Length: 303
Image (cartoon, rainbow, N blue to C red; front, side):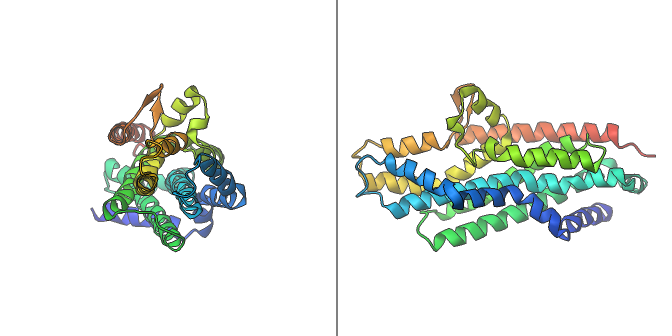
């Protein structure tokens, strides 16, 4: 157990002490925030206010702004849950290229302990970094208005972050184990950063895509995690808006917002409830953990 804890600590420190690694692992989140300030906020706000249809006296401009800011926050968190664990897991490729894995394999540690230490360290880094982003984001938003976020939903959002970090780490562990050089891993990281924001709907709502593209996006657990974050962080705001309308539109405005900004994942035209999304993420995570164990056993043999 001492070897497992020591190797896990070493992997965490390698990421935590590398300022450039932290910056580039958050680059997609930074880009999303920058685009939000430049034009995404205005576009989304105009779309929401144009859908009010005479309800402007009941739903204020400030409330619409808070909703848009909440959508931006979920995009930032979702992208971080993709890029941070992958950046941490790149340590595996670095160790392999520098032959450090030979030394690790020569220790009395069992192979399941070695692979678990990489997994745990990457998951911990992802949880800590994303939780900090969530805390800072909520603190900033609380100074701008009210999110109507209950204690239960607040705790649930941190639970989704933990669940998302475990899921992403397991999936990316399988992918990373096939890379043999840091250059190949870095190239994939660039592609991941570019595509990740679109897959989770951070730049453009997934509902704007065709049914086939929506299904493709929702095959990835990261999309489900981001959608769960939207539900936990923004359902209180939407319920408040629905109450403010007092049934004048029969709930059509809030329903339209949920449909437009993808509060339910869709696979092959079928909508998933929150419980079904959690089940889907859990199944993919279990399969990925089993796969990464088999891949590691075949790729990293004792010398």
